[in-house]
Image 1: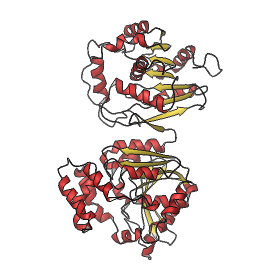
Image 2 (image 1 turned 90 degrees about the horizontal axis):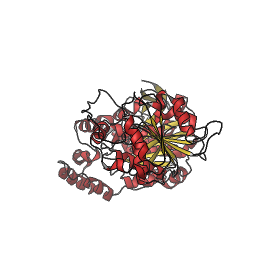
Image 3 (image 1 turned 30 degrees about the vertical axis):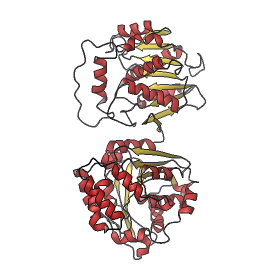
Length: 516
């Protein structure tokens, strides 16, 4: 394992996991070896995790002076690691008590930070108190668990001053969103990974100056993510919100069903949230209670265009089209729920995707935008145009099913092996609607008063082109263009697709055509 020397020559060790841009991951505990972080729920597939063992933990050396375990003195070790890695600015992720160290580092070296990710963070360094009532209320959320009564009784005894070593094993299930075999093994490893002597020094007198630290953090202008667990009490989401409020540019997320170790409780949800935050090309917005990731191109003042992907896709599928349109437009390409880096709540319908679009347009103040939807995204768009005819300025539907019943119906789909970039339940949920659609939908096509262009893929598409023509005839201000490309028109024939939408009113690179 790589090794470097601290300011006092203490040898410090770190591990590298994964590939990509380095992400320094400071462990909590306090003073627990970084092995417990694992690969952070698969985040190592997107970033190279730099996992240091703080002095006296794991494979790092113990200092001659135990007082250097104090949190404020560990800041110099983090800075030594940055210098050793040769990085001018660093992305820092930290967990639990490690957040106190990261906050002190941010206050002392704000110019060295690029981003800061705080996972179920301690708030001690800034004087935000976690109360006994916080812990009781979070525990109450677990009242239906079979181990709840024993854990709750032990928690009360611990809050009353009972012996930690005797009571903590019974309390520990409250710190995990799922007290399964993986959580039990993770918890059992804690004792052997923690330096208890160092832990006693970590928050010693003089370690923290909350008022000064909070004041300094209000001047930290880098992007900050604060991720809380729904079931966590240390901190509760309410206390984590207070921490996020200190920063000028903080994003706050509560991971559903998660406790203090969210990458174990739902690895996919954790990795998607953090990866979206760390990617400078991805933004996120809370839309109707769901976090939607999105990409954006073009000048902020340019006319807006929203591009909606099809089933099993993501906003990234529009990159070729978006880069072209960005010469004259502000282009947005969100990931629907269950896709890409957005939340995967597990249940899906065309109406939910319609509501995602509605919430996204409102959250980003995009009323009057041109909306372009492919396949499933096209259905979401025309369902919204039926309900809110004034919200969409122009509507472009690319080879989307008009929701006439399929004959024959689609057979039951079988999930392919391996990891997917979308949530598999999207497929059976949407197939069920395609086989038995809401019969009212076709009858409401005349309610779409937005100027509409429908682009069909021709005979090679699996979408019934005659049904597309019926839909066009039912919409008062609609026209049909056919590009013999099959279903993936904007992917396989981008130039022809661009020509079609430009002729419908989007400006081209030379400024010809009407503005959207």
